[in-house]
Length: 448
Image 1: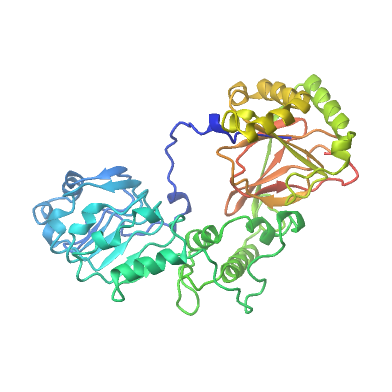
Image 2: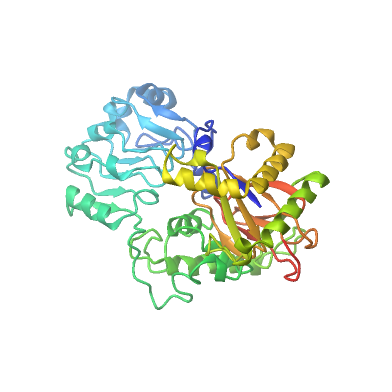
């Protein structure tokens, strides 16, 4: 059973301060600091946050250079959680600055103030949150006669080849626009070992294989992992892993080989690892009261015996399970709509299961119990590494049955090299389904 927050009530969430990119960064360089020389100004990793202004610049650039900003040719503002640059902030650099790095920040659009940099040759804006409709290149670059390169790679919403072609036509052939193209994907390359994808869906993939556990990630995320977690900036032929003609198969093959090399080179360690060499952290959910567990198990057994269940209802066929039913609150849909009416009718038929899930949830997390809007009821869920793309937050996993305690865990990726094994038998545990997760092995002769 999975209790999920997917609906209207879960969309209004408190802002949580988090570094979207720093946790997957390459190891810091040795030259970090606000003062380098008269031509290079490195303000990277200073946690500036928010809006960068002229006062920010003058206060960070220490004397005696504060009175001669015009000598700066290269400015690095990367990795600072910035989302805007004030008008006039770069005005004193307009006639001299030739390189600006604003990569790995939180920009949703390219700051208009950049347009004042008439001498700029290189603009690096990779690993941000840029949106296609905010990239007004013709207005931004109209006064940049010397511009040679714009790096927009690893902006997840900017992955269409049509966008790359449009931007390139706006700035002309003299400017090299770099963008990570994810759609349409480049044609499969027969030279790759495993092809672009293995298995038509999570249901048919072997959950023990690292390849299967990585398949749920987008090509963009795999590329980022290869560059950020393993430091693979370039391919052997000198191309970037973010280049449009580098296929998913190329990225996956190299990523798997890097994992394998680490496993082979890893010294003997006391850390528990899985078959793929990734560290495993074992945790257990909160124990649910026995009386509630018994009622839930009884209700589920009754449901499994019904005609509706015996027909093998699998509302999510991409997942390997004998049954998979989703109950949704009508609040997830527009009031009075057909979807709301259909959800209400289905919920009425299975009100007992919904109420028991609510009772169990209240016993563990009363706040979450007042917010969630969907319950997934499954029978004998097996493997199936996947990502819940529609979830807006974590879900709670709760398992009952006669399978052995400590088996059938929810396995969830914590980071590139760490997996959590979460024991949910008779327990409730919060899991972030927006990361790859699957069900660990258990005796197939038992029920889960």
